[in-house]
Length: 263
Image 1 (cartoon, rainbow, N blue to C red):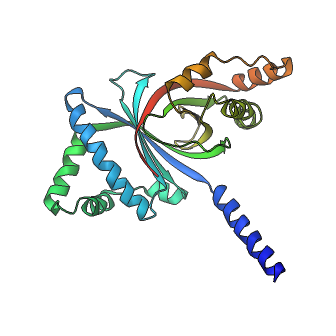
Image 2 (cartoon, one colour):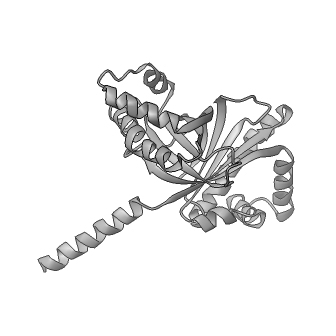
Image 3 (cartoon, one colour):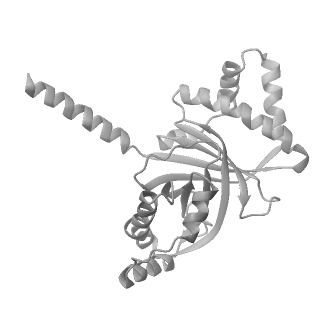
């Protein structure tokens, strides 16, 4: 009997481990809204939270975030970043088409008739532009129990690995920078860190190859992290950091606040 109990426990632990290590795919959409339509769009993104929750319930996505840009770009470029999470690359590439979105809206808002739902989407599409969309896969992340909630702060650091240094850059992120971020998390100076690799667009002309996400529970934690200096860092550590930095170009850094989240 004990043998079967141990076998059952072993299967449960394996299943949990497999689930924990499951790949995550993300679509980042950078949204531009005209200044005279910002108030209407704020109402729209609250509606979208309910729609994406229906998509989560239908196992089409694993999550959705809506971020408001704080700094890092002109507001003439875009003001928001939407992230949709998937557990499968095919689902990521297929996305949620308009038919599905309308179906989920009907479920979330049963008091709206078909014509009202269609009109709602026509209005939302007319008030926004998406100057950039990135398809990405998470390849490295810290071990943490960070809780995604409105008010969380994140920096989106877009990187481009230098030609011939793609593998060296990813190795540096995993072996040099991840331990640094992990240490900061354990010291309460950070919430979460992850490295994403761009799936599309591809090729030497692509503007970026990777993105790092640095998350903080609030501005206090963010500013404490900026003021922190690791006095225990050795000369060898500094050389490794500099080699890692030299393997890529930092294209831009955007600071944003989480406004809506679906998990």
